Length: 265
Image (cartoon, rainbow, N blue to C red; front, side, top):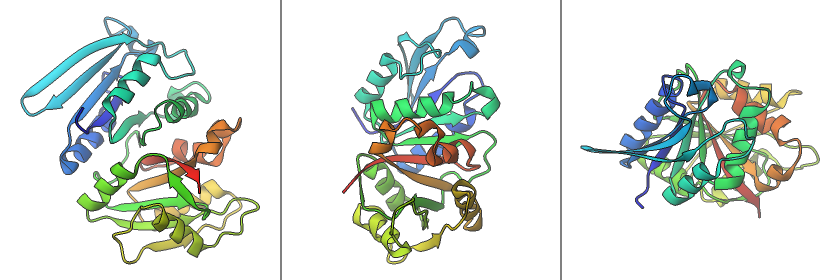
């Protein structure tokens, strides 16, 4: 299976920004774009069935395959979707982040949590009505400063960094009981294999009582087009993941958010 970018779509016009954003990335990185179309109960009344459809886009070629039923009442990743994502082995999975009013309480965070646990692939969330540059030119990468190793995502990030004239800024957001410094944060990013082609990287210390507000203020300060969050694998096992800082960030960020799963080193 060739490398591709997969966009998860709910059909109609609800995911057009995610599809457009993913298409820009696919063209820039010279890889195919595949759309996995999920008809949930929200769109079922306007669609003929409640199914998952895969659309593969190549020059002069379009393939559509129905592979199974999807029930959006489940809080876990549908087996059909998980199996399709594992089979495709995409560089990146892209999905639209609709307004919070479009989701039952906590449903978006639960869906993201399930995707990360099940597929372990890089996940990009594109907010509705985003005005961020596509593809991105300024990346804000949040780290707590402690060493980490990416479980996945290096191929996608390296492809972006090698393809685009990107500027990177590391936002150091220390966690409680951590003694890491801004220098530690920079070193952790370089040591994991990210941004090694850059002789110098901008860095910003986040100091705020409200960490989420501080990070989003930092994103605005450096005029970032993309926010990258390092999700520690251990955090997926924590009961408060859906109510934690990372979940708040990917639900509130005004710009697209890339989630990369990592383990401690």
